[in-house]
Length: 180
Image (cartoon, rainbow, N blue to C red; front, side, top):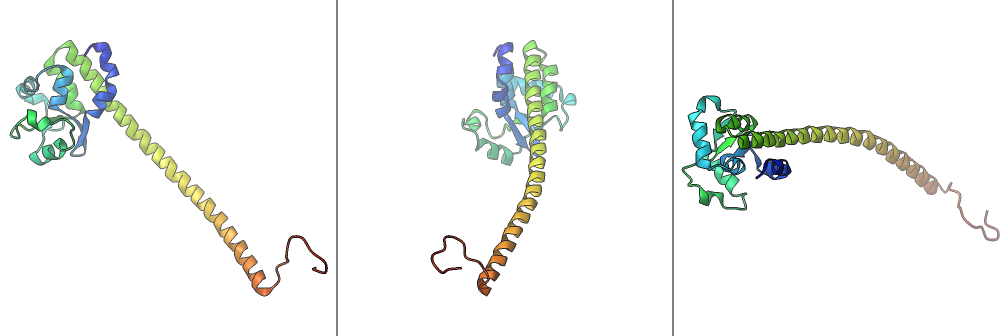
Protein backbone atom coordinates (compact mmCIF):
# COMPACT_ATOMS: atom_id res chain seq x y z
CA UNK A 1 0.00 0.00 0.00
CA UNK A 2 1.64 3.30 -1.09
CA UNK A 3 1.42 6.43 1.09
CA UNK A 4 -0.86 8.19 -1.38
CA UNK A 5 -3.02 5.08 -1.49
CA UNK A 6 -3.46 5.06 2.30
CA UNK A 7 -5.90 7.98 2.34
CA UNK A 8 -7.94 6.24 -0.33
CA UNK A 9 -8.15 3.27 2.05
CA UNK A 10 -10.08 5.22 4.73
CA UNK A 11 -13.36 3.32 4.10
CA UNK A 12 -11.46 0.01 4.21
CA UNK A 13 -9.91 1.00 7.53
CA UNK A 14 -13.25 2.13 8.94
CA UNK A 15 -14.70 -1.32 8.19
CA UNK A 16 -11.94 -2.83 10.32
CA UNK A 17 -12.95 -0.82 13.38
CA UNK A 18 -15.12 -2.87 15.71
CA UNK A 19 -16.88 -2.21 18.97
CA UNK A 20 -15.76 -4.38 21.87
CA UNK A 21 -16.43 -3.64 25.54
CA UNK A 22 -18.12 -0.40 24.45
CA UNK A 23 -14.88 0.80 22.83
CA UNK A 24 -13.94 1.26 19.19
CA UNK A 25 -10.99 -1.02 18.47
CA UNK A 26 -8.92 -2.56 15.71
CA UNK A 27 -7.62 -6.11 15.92
CA UNK A 28 -3.94 -7.03 15.74
CA UNK A 29 -4.17 -9.00 12.47
CA UNK A 30 -5.96 -6.12 10.69
CA UNK A 31 -3.35 -3.66 11.93
CA UNK A 32 -0.52 -5.99 10.90
CA UNK A 33 -2.00 -6.14 7.41
CA UNK A 34 -2.25 -2.34 7.21
CA UNK A 35 1.27 -1.83 8.59
CA UNK A 36 2.52 -4.60 6.28
CA UNK A 37 4.15 -6.58 9.09
CA UNK A 38 3.46 -10.03 10.46
CA UNK A 39 0.91 -10.20 13.29
CA UNK A 40 3.52 -12.02 15.35
CA UNK A 41 6.02 -9.16 14.88
CA UNK A 42 3.42 -6.54 15.77
CA UNK A 43 2.40 -8.37 18.96
CA UNK A 44 6.04 -8.94 19.87
CA UNK A 45 6.74 -5.19 19.58
CA UNK A 46 3.76 -4.52 21.86
CA UNK A 47 4.97 -7.06 24.45
CA UNK A 48 8.48 -5.59 24.40
CA UNK A 49 6.99 -2.15 25.09
CA UNK A 50 4.22 -3.18 27.49
CA UNK A 51 4.83 -0.09 29.64
CA UNK A 52 3.43 2.20 26.93
CA UNK A 53 0.39 0.00 26.23
CA UNK A 54 -1.90 0.20 29.26
CA UNK A 55 -5.29 -1.55 29.23
CA UNK A 56 -7.09 1.51 27.82
CA UNK A 57 -4.71 1.31 24.81
CA UNK A 58 -4.72 -2.44 24.16
CA UNK A 59 -6.36 -5.51 25.65
CA UNK A 60 -6.68 -9.17 24.74
CA UNK A 61 -10.08 -10.43 23.66
CA UNK A 62 -11.69 -13.13 25.76
CA UNK A 63 -12.50 -16.45 24.11
CA UNK A 64 -16.23 -15.57 24.16
CA UNK A 65 -15.61 -12.16 22.56
CA UNK A 66 -13.41 -13.73 19.89
CA UNK A 67 -15.96 -16.43 19.07
CA UNK A 68 -18.72 -13.82 18.73
CA UNK A 69 -16.56 -11.58 16.56
CA UNK A 70 -15.17 -14.37 14.38
CA UNK A 71 -18.69 -15.58 13.64
CA UNK A 72 -19.27 -12.24 11.90
CA UNK A 73 -16.19 -12.36 9.69
CA UNK A 74 -16.62 -13.45 6.09
CA UNK A 75 -13.08 -14.76 5.97
CA UNK A 76 -12.15 -17.46 8.44
CA UNK A 77 -9.70 -15.65 10.69
CA UNK A 78 -9.94 -18.38 13.37
CA UNK A 79 -8.38 -20.81 10.90
CA UNK A 80 -5.32 -18.54 10.69
CA UNK A 81 -5.05 -18.27 14.45
CA UNK A 82 -5.29 -20.96 17.11
CA UNK A 83 -7.93 -20.39 19.79
CA UNK A 84 -5.18 -20.19 22.41
CA UNK A 85 -3.76 -17.10 20.66
CA UNK A 86 -6.58 -14.62 21.15
CA UNK A 87 -6.26 -11.33 19.24
CA UNK A 88 -5.21 -8.08 20.80
CA UNK A 89 -7.66 -5.21 20.45
CA UNK A 90 -6.15 -1.75 20.04
CA UNK A 91 -8.06 1.41 20.92
CA UNK A 92 -7.39 4.65 19.07
CA UNK A 93 -4.64 5.43 21.59
CA UNK A 94 -3.04 2.03 21.13
CA UNK A 95 -3.00 2.49 17.36
CA UNK A 96 -1.22 5.80 17.83
CA UNK A 97 1.38 4.16 20.09
CA UNK A 98 2.04 1.43 17.52
CA UNK A 99 3.71 3.99 15.26
CA UNK A 100 6.19 4.65 18.09
CA UNK A 101 7.17 1.01 18.51
CA UNK A 102 7.19 0.01 14.84
CA UNK A 103 9.26 3.11 13.97
CA UNK A 104 8.99 3.03 10.22
CA UNK A 105 7.81 5.78 7.90
CA UNK A 106 5.10 3.37 6.72
CA UNK A 107 3.93 2.82 10.31
CA UNK A 108 3.72 6.57 10.99
CA UNK A 109 1.76 7.25 7.80
CA UNK A 110 -0.57 4.30 8.38
CA UNK A 111 -1.11 5.38 11.99
CA UNK A 112 -2.11 8.86 10.85
CA UNK A 113 -4.65 7.41 8.43
CA UNK A 114 -6.07 5.05 11.07
CA UNK A 115 -6.41 7.88 13.59
CA UNK A 116 -8.23 9.88 10.90
CA UNK A 117 -10.62 6.95 10.46
CA UNK A 118 -11.33 6.93 14.22
CA UNK A 119 -11.88 10.70 14.14
CA UNK A 120 -14.27 10.37 11.17
CA UNK A 121 -16.28 7.76 13.08
CA UNK A 122 -16.44 10.01 16.14
CA UNK A 123 -17.57 12.93 14.00
CA UNK A 124 -20.25 10.75 12.41
CA UNK A 125 -21.46 9.72 15.87
CA UNK A 126 -21.61 13.35 17.02
CA UNK A 127 -23.44 14.39 13.86
CA UNK A 128 -25.82 11.45 14.23
CA UNK A 129 -26.64 12.48 17.80
CA UNK A 130 -27.19 16.10 16.71
CA UNK A 131 -29.44 15.06 13.82
CA UNK A 132 -31.30 12.59 16.02
CA UNK A 133 -31.93 15.26 18.66
CA UNK A 134 -33.05 17.74 15.99
CA UNK A 135 -35.47 15.17 14.54
CA UNK A 136 -36.84 14.43 18.01
CA UNK A 137 -37.49 18.16 18.58
CA UNK A 138 -39.18 18.49 15.17
CA UNK A 139 -41.24 15.38 15.76
CA UNK A 140 -42.43 16.68 19.13
CA UNK A 141 -43.25 20.10 17.66
CA UNK A 142 -45.11 18.79 14.62
CA UNK A 143 -46.85 15.98 16.49
CA UNK A 144 -48.35 18.65 18.75
CA UNK A 145 -49.38 20.75 15.76
CA UNK A 146 -50.92 17.73 14.04
CA UNK A 147 -52.67 16.79 17.27
CA UNK A 148 -54.22 20.27 17.30
CA UNK A 149 -55.33 19.82 13.67
CA UNK A 150 -56.74 16.35 14.41
CA UNK A 151 -58.56 17.69 17.47
CA UNK A 152 -60.08 20.50 15.37
CA UNK A 153 -61.19 18.06 12.66
CA UNK A 154 -62.64 15.74 15.28
CA UNK A 155 -64.51 18.66 16.87
CA UNK A 156 -65.97 19.69 13.50
CA UNK A 157 -66.95 16.12 12.70
CA UNK A 158 -68.67 15.78 16.06
CA UNK A 159 -70.46 19.10 15.52
CA UNK A 160 -71.68 17.94 12.06
CA UNK A 161 -72.76 14.60 13.51
CA UNK A 162 -74.84 16.39 16.16
CA UNK A 163 -76.52 18.52 13.46
CA UNK A 164 -77.30 15.39 11.42
CA UNK A 165 -78.68 13.64 14.49
CA UNK A 166 -80.90 16.64 15.25
CA UNK A 167 -81.91 17.12 11.60
CA UNK A 168 -80.43 20.65 11.55
CA UNK A 169 -77.90 20.13 8.84
CA UNK A 170 -78.66 22.01 5.62
CA UNK A 171 -78.47 19.91 2.52
CA UNK A 172 -75.99 21.07 -0.06
CA UNK A 173 -75.92 20.56 -3.80
CA UNK A 174 -78.46 21.09 -6.61
CA UNK A 175 -82.07 21.67 -5.72
CA UNK A 176 -84.89 20.29 -7.80
CA UNK A 177 -88.33 21.67 -7.81
CA UNK A 178 -89.89 22.43 -4.40
CA UNK A 179 -86.87 21.46 -2.24
CA UNK A 180 -85.72 24.24 0.07
